[in-house]
Amino acid sequence: MYEDMERVLIAEDEIARRVRELGAEISRDYAGKELLVVGILKGAVIFMADLVRCLNIPVRLDFMAVSSYGASSESSGVVRILKDLEQNIEGLDVLIVEDIVDTGLTLNYLRENLLTRGPASLKICTLLDKPSRRKVNVQVDYNGFVIPDEFVVGYGLDYDGRYRHLRDILILKRQVYCGKEQRENCT
Ligand code: PRP
Ligand code: MN
Ligand code: MG
Image (cartoon, rainbow, N blue to C red):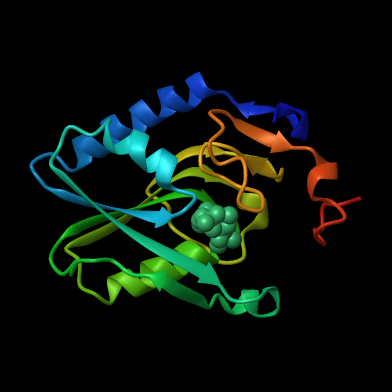
């Protein structure tokens, strides 16, 4: 497995430490309230599972799955909902949990969409922020790490559906994805 990897970017213990800090911060901010945590499938599942176990406030969980339309219409920011929330979020304190904000299109869409449903509050927590690729500005309330423009996998993040179960966040070797896909950082 690890022969596909260039190197570890963020090791398991560093992730765990930061997740505990985020959990403490979120618990403080929502003290006395109940939080609905919305995980965005599939990338967010590992982070979400660890994060919610660092919260010492009442919590409920729900999930959404989204997919962006083809690359040609990517800049429009149109996102399709594959699986919607199971509950009405009107009047609830909602926290969206994501693994990474890259172009920002996914979170920008989710934020706009969920705001139309009348939550009491809506905040965003992402483990990773890759600002170099941003197309639309998204206000992130809780962020774990700012990362450089590298293709990262592990801890929920995939390439072609693989590597989500790896415990570290790793930089994928160029040769694994170059040639299969046209990416601007393939040289
Ligand atoms: C990835 C990632 C974020 C999104 C970020 O999900 O998990 O959800 O892309 O990219 P953006 O900021 O450019 O919109 P992906 O669509 O790969 O689905 P997955 O979570 O199932 O891997
Ligand atoms: Mn995702
Ligand atoms: Mg993905």
